[in-house]
Image: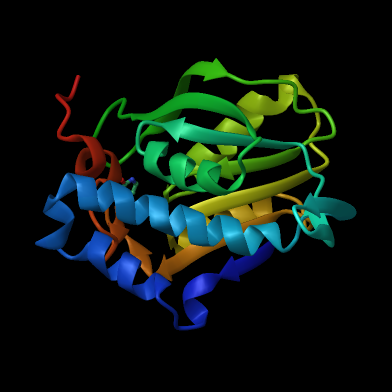
Length: 219
Ligand code: URA
């Protein structure tokens, strides 16, 4: 897998990442969602440099402008619910993308420290020959990303796969690096060292879904 860790090069992206992490600033849900969306825009922009381009001529009021435009048929797939702001950010840049949504959650069978990923809702277009962008804001264990990818298999074989994430744990990144092919790209804003016993990224930011949309009742 080809890993693009964007915070390796200091940029304004670090401001957005520090704001979603900061205990005081992240309490403002609208700002939290917007910062995740802005990170999605930056990741999408960097990813776009790896798409396939073709020559196009644009007619302006004053003449002709030669350019190159990407020609990929993009399907953007996100995991509900935490993935929604990241999805929006990517969609801001890939105007014509088709969209897939999947609901995957951690089911704690016996104790809070072990869980399996349960997929229970999936809406997806045909993926055959398309460019699949699979977005999950928090790449903790990597299991949700892999479970999602497995669930998408009946919808066709994409021509290329880009995984997009905001914060990853090194273990999760290593896990998906083994699970996905060498041609797969991972676009990630930053990578943290560790996971705690409940599978949360440390230092991370907490629960991305709750921060974006409010607390949920556990069932
Ligand atoms: N999901 C989150 O929202 N946060 C984590 O740290 C890990 C998974």
